[in-house]
Image (tube, rainbow over all chains, first blue to last red; front, side, top):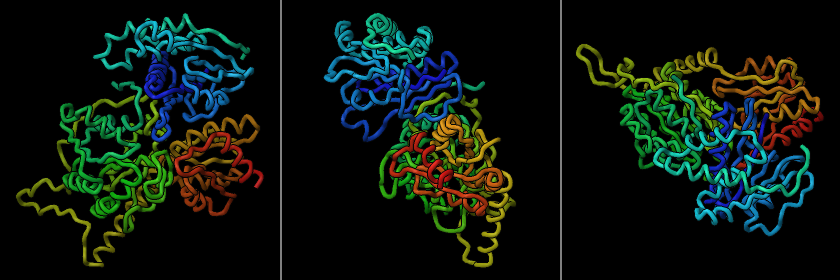
Length: 185
Length: 355
């Protein structure tokens, strides 16, 4: 199994840390992982993205231009990465601020309205964990218990009081993700 | 016991150096390698091992601090990125000319000039052919994973001390910024005994140790040059390191190091799905260069493509190794652009197979 993922959105949405938690979760179940962020001028202008690979084998290229899954959190990223999903792949997006919704028919499309849900939970900081929950529901490649372990590893100890809140957000994401379009891959 | 962590390449270098028992780090920040200095500052290795971490006032100051530390027989290192490494060249030449060990990390970004902060491999000539003046060489190690970033720190120090010569880790912004799994070695104690050549104070009944790269007597200077050349030949004999991937039945060969080698692994898979029998040779040492292995492979394959994020630098060493036996081509992107795996396959088809 090899899962090649791009997570893309605004800086500050927790894109990089969500990728890091996912990578740690992979390590918790003995997978090979890589985490390759965009850095430098690409990030100016507010967009941030990270490529995460989870695999049972040694990972070849950490830099990709086609993905099994794209997790898209703003319109610019939608414009850039909808076309980068492999045929039969998965696109997950947050509808908040999206003007042009995904149109491809050869990929599965799911929507997780995490921004709205985070506002309801009165904690915008857990936004990325709600998105992660949505991903785990539609691509159950990493066990929830390993994600919780991964979360613990990637958070500095002084923040461990926040673990239950993050776990709750992940679980909320599992519940609210909706399938918009499905293809058999 | 080894410890498993998820780390950036730059952080792995810093942590591996603490664990290798380094005595000091002298550096100056520059993207994309500032995490080395940042990690060391945050980690406070002085409290763990007594290691000194110092942000110098400039790159020139940092390399001269390395020169001083190395002269005392200490395990010292510095890191920078391309423009900063250019500034350090005078010091590096002096260190090589004084036969001192040290480790220099170059997390390469696109050039020339200030260039870009995105990854590149355009400092190959500078690293392998002597970036400063004079007939000297660096031991040049080229990691292609975060694990190797960590492993090559210890290897770099070991080789530097073995040959009394500076060693360089030549990596790039992509591996520096990327996180992967890394198994970290146990903490090694810092040295308590120092090499006999080190300037640790005059002992009674013993001559002073003098560290200098200056000798105005040409006959002596030539003798010195012959001696260090002998050392470089010894490195070529004993320290070549490389890895092969799918080479046994290969009809074509890709040669790539660092980030390019990772992408080429994917290109090999893609090409083989198309029925093209291609393999990859990945030099782990750029000096000494795996000349013999490439020459052997040249007898087996129909053509060789060098893949580098440069205008074609390593390709010259490949051509020297192949000696005209088979066609050798180059494919590379520049200025911080990273080639895609598909592009490499297309280049192989057009430049080598079809060309």
